[in-house]
Length: 294
Length: 183
Image 1: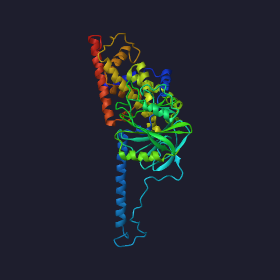
Image 2: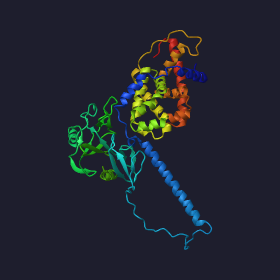
Image 3: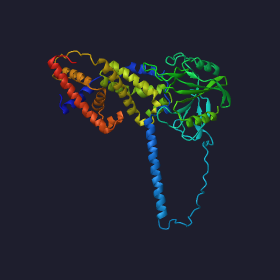
Image 4: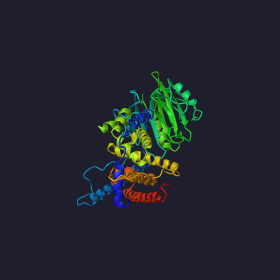
């Protein structure tokens, strides 16, 4: 049985023989489990490897582009009848004065926020699980995911930043046992629930506005040992009314909330970042939040 | 159709996701069972893989790569589970080999038992490679793509997996002949 050809035949036959129908309960149990599991946003699912590939490919593309421009330039200069020193070109020379480019160029009419849209631009999204619209202006390097998330420039490791909008959520009393969390009925109820989390490092409240509505801002630093709960369970930061929630994306994650009561309902703007998120990205994120219109 | 289901599932439509995996569940279960050699553990692995797939579904940017992504995810879950299981059962002794050979079958009962024992001696990585090659019919380049390793590495690992399987079978045959029990 153990020569090369016979073992290949034996393995072919052996593997072909065996159960090939999944019991129905597998799908039933999986369906039940996913109903309690919120999907991770795509911005967090890009690994350092993806970023490395993106960065490398961009560098290669830039080098190739520079080489092509240099070759074309040399060819133009050296071609017979081409421009020579002191001669007039067929067209007016471009102005040497650089025109400052605004950091953000809003679109004339906001496009729909969706996965893959890139800044700069203004986009219209929807609060998660709702038809409540919001507009946001994002700078160059930022992008959209789904209808409720914008994320900052891709960074390797836990250095990203993303801004989400939420409604019908609340902070669970225990992030490792979030079942039964009831959505906050007001901004105050939510802020009280946050303050009750003695295991979180929570800042003082700051009065601010979001989309022109009076709002409260709080900054939270989650414990260093998140996102693990043990037993393969994730650490939930906010729970939705459908039993799902948003989970911690890494150790010591920073979460900032802007909470406002709008037409009798608390609406939430969340910013997720990390201790190592570049200050420049955080500064941009403040501008992005300030651009939000409800 | 799959593209629409995938897009809907990525927007959070659970029914679309279940529909998407329903047609794939038999194939995925069969892969898990062959790597883990245990129906209960295959069920657990498949459930875990499907939950992870749902959670990370928005990371799938190319719909044409969905099946490869899902297979890779399942294989990784199986390898992780087999690794844990291997540690736990490293010191267990298996039942002795017995039972007559069935002469009219290509693989006798004793052959299957020997294969089962030999296969369990392999590392989880080697088991996965053999299943991808012999059960799914993957060539080394496809194995490489599925496992996210270079093609040369896949060829090398397949070679070593075959060699390890032969060695495991030889060892099992010797054990059976000498003592009738397998360590």
